[in-house]
Each structure stands twice: as C-alpha cells, then as structure tokens.
Length: 393
Ligand SMILES: Cc1ncc(COP(=O)(O)O)c(C=O)c1O
Image (tube, rainbow, N blue to C red; front, side):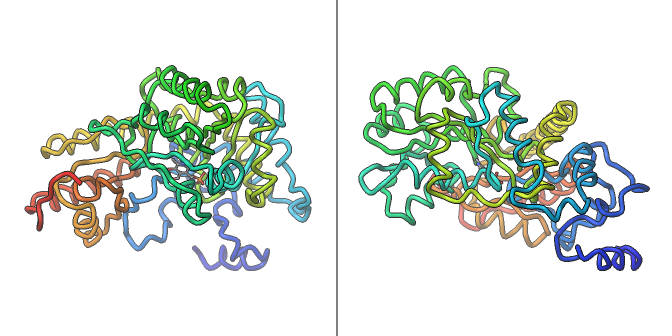
C-alpha cells in the first residue's frame, strides 16, 4: 500500500476494518476478468503461500459486488439497527426462489445456520445423521451439545450412502446431506435427492433434513439441481447456500437457508445467526443479480478443474469427478505427509478427512496461475516415494 493510501485509510478511520483499500480509493485500478481489483489480488499477504486448503474462491467477488460496496461507503453506514440493505437482501433471495420473504433466513455465512439446525432439531434423544467424510460444522456442534451422531460412511465409490443414511434417519432429529459433498466433490442428481428426502419423510415425518448446497453452482452435470422447491413443499426440509464459493465472498460472511417459514424460522429463535452488515448485504444483492459473472466464474473454475484433474491423471493419480471447486485425490500416501511436503514448498492443501486420511488429499482450486505453479509442486512431491505407503483407511 502506498504511503498516501495508508494515510487516506488512517484519515477516514477504516484502517483496521479489513476493507480493501482498492474499494476505498475507487477508480484508476485495473479490474481483472473476474471483477477483482488487480492490486488487491496481487497484494494478498500470504507470504508467497498458495492457499488451496479451505475451498475459498481466490478470484474473489465480482465487479458488481465490489462496486455495490463502494457505493454503500457513505455516512449511512452509521445506521445499523437494522443495517441498510439487509431487508432488501432477504427480498432479493426470496424473489430469486419465488417464495415469501419469511421462507428465507440469512446468516453471516451458512456455517451459523448449520449450527442452528442442530440446536433447533436435535437433542439427546434425537440424533443427527451425517456422512463420513463430509463437512463437519453440524456434526461438531452436535458433539459439543452431547447430541448422538450417526455418521454413515460413504460407499466404496465415495458417493454418499443414501440407503444407509435413510435407514439411520428413522427417529433422528436432523439429517445433514451435503450435495455436492465436501470433500469428495461428488453429487447426486436433484431427482435422487428428492427420492431420498421423500423416503425419509415418509418413514420419519418429524425428522428435519438439511440439504447443504454450498457448491451447487459449480456442478457441471445438469442433472444436479437445487431441491429448494421440494423444501417449500415439505415441512422440516430446507436448503442452505453459501456466498463463500461461486460468489467469492467468504471474507464478507454471507449464507442463507430456504424452506417453509415454520421450518427455517425455528433456527434464529434458538441460535444467533450472526450480525449482518450493510456492505455485505449490498454486495450480496448485487452478486445475486450478476448472473453473467457467476456464469463466467463457474466456467473459469471448470477450466481450472479440468487442467488440474488432467495433470494428476498424467502423473498417474486418480481423482474423483468433482462438481465443486476442490478435488479429492488418491495421493497414495497419508494426507499429512502430502500436506507437509507441499507446505514445505509453499502450497497449502486441505486437512485430514477420515476415514480417507491415509490415502486421499483434498486440494482446493485456486486461480489458473496458482494451479500451474501448484501442479509443479505436486509433481515434485509425488515423484518421491511415500515414506509409508498405506492401504485404504
Ligand atoms: C459444504 C459446506 N457448507 C458450508 C460451508 C460454510 O461456508 P460459509 O459459512 O462460509 O458460508 C462450507 C465451507 O467450506 C462448506 O464446505
């Protein structure tokens, strides 16, 4: 940051607010293909580390979202009870799904909603049904609360074991179903998820079902569809969506759920979903309406995914057909060994995902430039024999 910019930031008192100076200074900065400001992208203070560990979106928000925040940078930010744009954001999401605004709840990320679901629908006598491996926020909250966890291992082809999950669901408080699934990247069609949901609801009408669609924008198989309409039809069923993936807004913290009002409104009654802010809400509205940007982002992610999958295939390593912005690769050594060797060469990859931590690593997809550099690191790391070759965990 130049001295004059630093002074400017200090003068207006936002230096510690974590806001990009590019947003504050506005014009004159090169805008990248994805609307990110080139300077901000280059300024990433990761000490030269390529971060492919958290399924973030290294291209960031689109231009419309950045500009919406820029426009919102006015003295109106002094108002906050409620913050500007938050009601409009709920309306915009409701309009997108053609539902009443009471069928939508928003949170500072979808994470707090995944936690709230456990508080609202589970208890010591009402277990959560989840998968292994899958995203852990709901399960972690259940364990903290002493809620019994029924964790159903994925099938040998790493797809979710829907039969096993349906069997376990009878009498459960909540089923957590991540589609597409993190970390495998695999997904079922909308029709298959609908069949599963109807089966569970028929056998166990009081069981709530959360379908986490954080990655669904990235799915390349057209049969993979949101089940939001089904959520509107059936009580106790809801979908969650995150702005942290295709919308590139993880740092702005925004997510939402859609379902029947009685279902979704049960969650903020029992658990705080965060305190929304006006800039995030303004960006959320703009990004939701920026279909062209999301299409370009999804196409760019697909191009990078194909490049990275091809590179692993050429190296002789199998990876699953991902519908997300991460890939799950059988690296034929422990995730820890692979992770440490990559970290030594400044590439950070994902944590352990039991029961596959002895054989598979999750690699988030960064920008094309990052992946070209990361692939060279993967090539060097994998060219060394594993310290301890391991069988499937
Ligand atoms: C499947 C899944 N759901 C939800 C989240 C939470 O996202 P956020 O709280 O940023 O919306 C993540 C984050 O990685 C995720 O992978």
